[in-house]
Length: 238
Image (cartoon, rainbow, N blue to C red; front, top):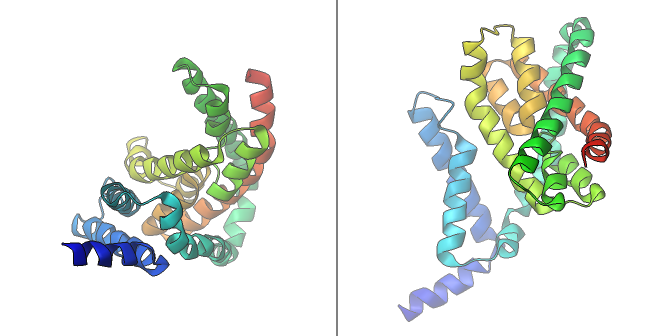
């Protein structure tokens, strides 16, 4: 047992250990998603988060130690986001034809996301710092954390809420849009991207390339809109 404990102390301090653990957790989540027939409720990211969270809890590993290994994946978020430009370019004609409806949907979606987040927080008696962290939750993580921090909110809490929002959107978006009979891939994708950022965009690409492309532009535009709208609504409501 002493040898095992010594080995774990050595491995847990290595960044490669947690990088490998993150990749394995995601592969397990993706395998479960595929085995389920790609049911939205079986979300690869949610499963991976649960597995890694459980591993950190059981091994009493600080998040900072884990992040030393996972920061390479965090770095890849930037290139992955930029890569969304390719399907956007391929669908540029359809995007130009939909500029006016997209602008209306963007404003409605951004305002609704911020107002509902703050309203629900107020209803449950959240502190001002928590409300500021909740406000930009529907924007992509780097933007949301920057907006929250600039307003005086807790960026770490914002990051958690962004992930929860993305996973929730990826799980319920497809059945909800099917229920209300939204069939246009452009409308489906843009709605998913505005409300559920990168995780939602990944779900959009599972439906079709056009759905994913519009989810990508929805994610990008909502990030920009949130930087403008969130501080204004926060100042008004709080």
